[in-house]
Amino acid sequence: MTHYPTEFREVASGLGFPEGPIALPDGSCLVVEMQARALARVGTDGRITRVAKLDGGPNGGAIGPDGKCYICNNGGVLFHTDEYGLRPMGQDPGYRTGSIDRVDLETGNVEVLYETSDKGNLRSPNDIVFDRHGGFWFTDSGKTRPRDADRGSVCYARADGSECREVIFPMLVPNGIGLSPDQQTLYVAETHTARLWAFELSAPGEIVRKPWPSPHGGTLVAGLPGYQWFDSLAVDSAGNICVATLIKGGVTVISPDGKNIDHVPLPDMYSTNICFGGSNQATAFVTLANSGRLVALDWPHPGLALNC
Image 1: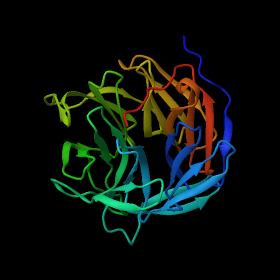
Image 2: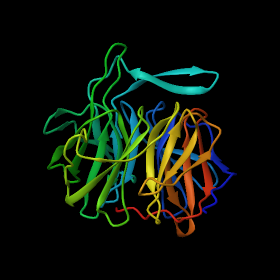
Image 3: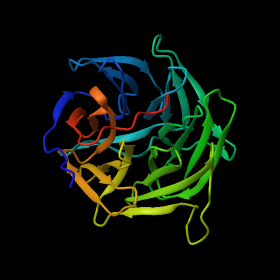
């Protein structure tokens, strides 16, 4: 039986709805701040330095093969503050489109890499993962409005700006995305259904599509009961899928076959994302967005080293 941590260390506070943590080799972490519309670096001493200002709503990030930071930008959301803290409340009135942005970490320069896929405008890019071929998968959650909502999708894109294709559609608010240790399976978490799906990969940017009744070609790994939502995710070296969980705040750890499910509780209803870093990838960094914190936990399995 795996024993998951019951204690955490606060690394930084005062962040503007943090998401998309990226552990860097020097021990610092990058995080996006969705409400503050920025990419920030959190030092080992907890000091926060803004690396770049980002329009819209930076939502997830990953380091690409060129060393730059690729950002899923949802285009902007409204925020509400109540007794639980800060939380998003739907499409910003000034929203135009979502995008994939690229940030030069040395200069802070931001360029828009994609605003469209082969199916039209990007709606609300959310989370991103690079494969070993230098391309990247990302979820597009779609936008929610007072009386209707978009259906979401998963796209595959090239880091050089030459191609962005919709591969998986439709999904119900797809959010977290990650690859198995052997790179043969793509995992996607749906937020409001609290479902984790697996997609078999046949080539870079290609899935082996399962027939109906699969709604989109994937295989259901797990679906959680009760009122809880799935946010972003990371995969550890044992192949477990570690999903940041909303409402029932914390991290839900799901085995690849879906048979073993553990929950690591954290004191924030918007535990939004997780990454691994530190010595031997043995530290889990989790963003607690309601309270604007980055925390660290000693993880029983080393994290899976990401492609970059």
